[in-house]
Amino acid sequence: MGKKGDNDDNSARKRTLDFQNNNRSNPSPIPLEKCPWCDAEFQRNSFQLLPNTDQPTNLRVFCANRHCHFRGDNPLPIVAVDEPIYRRLPCFIISTVDKFASLPWVGETGALFGRVDRYDNDGFYGPTQLGRGKPLGGYLPPPDLIIQDELHLISGPLGTMVGLYETAIDALCSQEIDGKKIRPKIVASTATVRRASKQIQALFGRSEVDIFPPPGPDRRDSFFAKTVPATEKNARTYVGITAQGRSLKVVLLRSYLALLGAAQKYWLEQGGKKNFNNPADPYMTLLGYFNSLRELGGSRRIVEDEVNSGLVRYSQRKRVGEISGLFVGRKIDDEPEELTSRVSTSDVAETKRRMESTFDKDEKVDVVLATNMISVGLDITRLGLMVVLGQPKTAAEYIQATSRVGRDEERPGLVVTLLNIHRPRDRSHYERFFAWHSTFYRAVEATSVTPFSPRAIDRGIAAITVALARLGHPKMTAPLRAFDIKINTCCTCPLRPSLR
Ligand SMILES: [Zn+2]
Image (tube, rainbow, N blue to C red):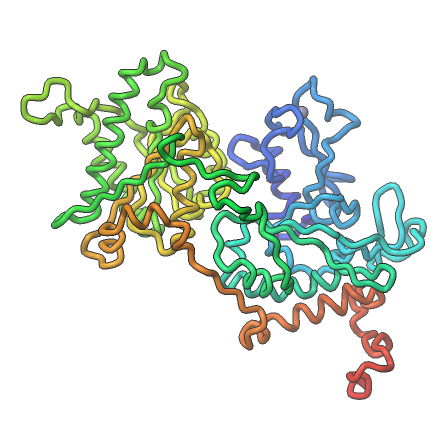
């Protein structure tokens, strides 16, 4: 946690103080916005820095709801800051893989692998805090279950470095029981993966892989999961649009106008605001997906200008002789919302919150523009309409991104993919649109992870060697104890003579 005078902008201390000063414009200092017990939003007094705000070592979280169980002397059992996590050692920890980088640098991380031998009411103590607590009479057992979510993201350069660090983690988590080496169980989850056994071998060094649910005798019914034909249940519908002699910008403009105008007409026909279960509601929020921030930026101008002004009088577009027309004019927000890396985390959270409100409420949002940031972790069942600009680079990304709409059987999804006919790859996707979409899981690319390639070893071997030596030998865990390497190497070690 940040200390007084440090200039770390993102310390938990600073985030807490910012939130206490202004809880409207600053995000919650922990990755939760609400009490997990009663769903009441955190307020300024929900966070308490202890023992004082100048040099805090702990952050307590209380619920703001007066009737909730977790207030007063009973804070929420959530530990969200590094120091208390290393001291309290919760039995369930959620983390991202980039935290692996602190293994060689922070001796306290050894506590997560059970390298502690004393305890008191505040928690556990390892070799970095000598002289505190009563002896435990041995070490705690290391973690024995590791869950890796979104396995497909641990690929490429990131996966390669993670694979190297996994070597150290596997060694630190292994224990010997009755002369038998027990390694932790690893459960990895993903919806899009190919050649999973190779990726797992490279990442975790395990040759045995069991796939769950197992395939079973019938490919369509494995007992745990069943394939339902699209004719029986509402499925997601994909539509490909391309236009000869028109730029993709124009196709985007026309598609946005038509989709927003048609949704409005259907929504009004179904009772508009008065119908709380309006079946057109999922299609009132248009989620635009872009392959790059550059394309998103260009399209943002189109939405702010031409879509905005054109939509107001779009009801005038009728076929010859048609009386009512397919579209109804509509006034949308002046600025579309964005879910990208260039907006702040609090704005992203705010947009996600607004996207959940139906169109009978004032907080509704008309257009959201997004990049692959939404491919994971956007789980809003309300959404039903997405427009993808250009075919994404990989099939896995396309599947992950478009699965953000139509997540509810009652609100089937519509994905409109705009393709550039002058680009050979897009054209090929357009020409084989139906065939490719009916089997697109087959097109998921195999990812490559190469932790022991020479370049990866050049970059990462020092870090994992230090992590293993430091955390594996409690005598070398404390800062500056690396000097004792000469004393601590065993007599049979081949390095021994050269170190002298
Ligand atoms: Zn509560």
